[in-house]
Image (cartoon, rainbow, N blue to C red; front, side, top):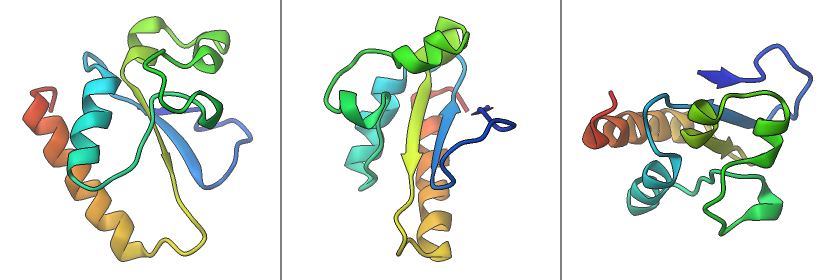
Length: 98
């Protein structure tokens, strides 16, 4: 579930919620697969806390718990995005939430 799909937001950053999944576990597995992601805002990097911003927006804690933040750089290629999507799908399947 893409959070904030209809909201004005930074174009290169998306929060995706994976219901019934612990975001911190997904972040750790994605790190092992070579992807850098986060469960919180950049100012909370390294924290295992759920995003206080998502909670303040009224996102249920069950979704916030499984939310992962993805960001793209200005040099990120379409091929890199496609590879990332494959790695994310693999990780979700490995965790057993796919």
